[in-house]
Structures are given as C-alpha cells and as structure tokens.
Amino acid sequence: MKEDFTKIGKTLLLAVIAMIVAIFTIIIAVGELIGVFSTEKFIISALAIFVGLVSVLFFQFFIQKYSVPWSYNVAIVGFPRSGKTTLLISLFGEIFAGMILPIRITPKGTKTIERINESLEMLKKGQALGPTKDQDRFAFRANLTIRRYHFPRTYKVEFGDFPGDESQVYSEKYGSWLHTTEFFKWVVDSDAIIFVIDLGRYLVRDESRIAYVAQISSALRAAWQHFLDSNEHRIQEVRQHPLVLVFTKADLFGVKKDQDTWDLIEQEIAKLGFGEDIPPIKEIDHVGLARGEARVIEDFAEVIRYFETEAPNFQVVFTSSFGLLDGKRLGIKDFLMAVLPRRKIW
Image (cartoon, rainbow, N blue to C red):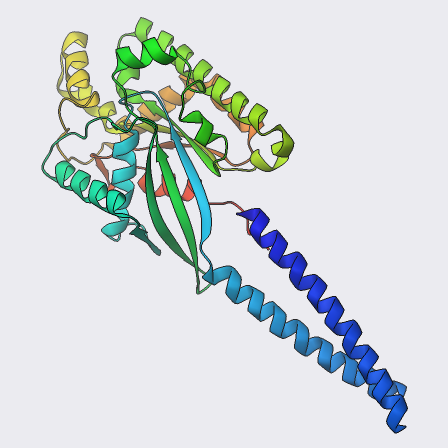
C-alpha cells in the first residue's frame, strides 16, 4: 500500500521538475527571439506558471490518493474457539446498524457476502457460530470507507480469519505455537495484526488461569518475534503497523453474580464461553467490567509491557459480541479504530 503512493509521488515530482525546466527554457528562448525579454517579466511569468502547474499536479495527486482504494490486510490470530469469527461478524453488524459512524463498509465477493449475512442471521437467532472450516484461512473482503476532513478515504480491506480446528486436532498438528501454522505465512505480509485471547478459558480456577496466561503469553510473543524475523528487511516499517491485543467474551465478567459456588460458575462459563450456547443479550455491568479488566491487565502485564515496547501503535481492547455497554456491543468500535492505519501516506 505505501509503496504504490511513494512511486506516484516520486513520478509527479520528477514530472514537475522536468516541466519547470522546459518552460523556463522556452520563455528565455522566445524572449530573446522577439526582443522583449526582461528579468522582471521572466520572473513573473515563471512564478505564475510554476504556481499553476504545482496546483494542478497537487490537486490531481490529491484526488487520485482519495479515489483509489488502498489495499489493507488485517490478520486475526488466535487459538481455536477464541471468538475470532464472531468478533469479525459483530464488527460488520455494528457498522451495518450505523453504530460506528462515519464509517461505511461494503462486503465484496459472493462468499464474503453470504457468510456475513448467514452468520448475522445465526447470531440474531441465538445460534453460536461454528469454527471456520476453510483449510487455510477465510478472507472477509470489503471496501471500508471513512470520511475524514470531508473527504472519503476507502480501504480495500481483507480480514484473514484463521481456521478453527478442533482443539485436539490443532494441538496434535501445531502444539502450543501460532507461528507454525500455514495461515501465518499470510500473516507475515499483513498490514495489521490482531491477537485474540479467549476470556472464557481465563475465567476458571486459579491454577488453570496461571497456566493459560503463561501459554498464551509465550505463544503471542513468539508469533510477534517470528513476524519481525520474517520482515527483517523492513523491520522499522512493520513495527509501525497496528498491533492489537483483543480480549473477547468480556461479558463473562458478570457470570458469577447469580452463582453460589465455583463449580457452578465454571459450568456457566463453559456453556456460554466455549460456543455451546449464546449468552442472553444484556447490559454489561460497569463495575464488574472495570474489575475484570483490571484483573486481566494485571495477569497479562508482562506480555502487555513487552508489546508496548515493541510496537508504538499497540493497543489493548476488551470486546463482547453479545453483551451491551450503553446500548452498544462492547469494544467493537475501539477494535476497528485500533486496526486502521495510524498515519497518512503521501
């Protein structure tokens, strides 16, 4: 994406220089021939032509920049059943419903259109989305348009959704690593990386939680290091890419309100957090959410600090595809804003 507009800018600069030199030469030659050449006339004419040319070329480049969609690839990385597909579908649903303004999104391609609308229908009916079945990855393709300073900017976005193998099959094939999967070959060339962590597996007994935090932290750190190693030739550039740590299923922070024992709490979390059932749409408790987020930030502090030092555009986002906070799905807008490019390209 950046390289295309860098080439355009260099070409336009060379064209401006060549045209200015040619015009100056013509003005001098004509002035000498007809005997009306003077320094003042030359300077005035040259400046007028220069300003006109620069204005025209700048305007042409400006229009071209905003009218041509920028290709932008977003990789969604996480272990099976962590809520990656549901997160993406919820993002489309929120934009369709006008909850994230001033952004418009237009799905592209039959497979993307059908999968998005079928999945939205399932969620509306209270049916859980199954794991992604595609062998390598499923690419959700869409044109995403943002209006900035009264000018629309369109991105040709491709969200790469990692296949959701059954946990045992995944473990036998890849172990506890993410960067050894076939999908990660696509991640290496992405413009933004989303690491997804499943809070459903985090909210269990303390001994299991400690092991889960250690496993996830190690896997994500190794994945990021492998990403940098594979992009050694442009490492300063890729460090500027958006890097987002998304904790899904944050509405589970409120599960224990109606439970009396840890066994019942874990049974409820297992039912609602691992795809067997859909939590009823409810308003998320602000206090419970704040306490839960603080606890997660503390437990994952080591890997969060690591990413903060590695990537200047790193962010942490808590999301819920079902529970609502002030009438909106928790964190979906923050997730999208964190993914978009951080700087302008000229």
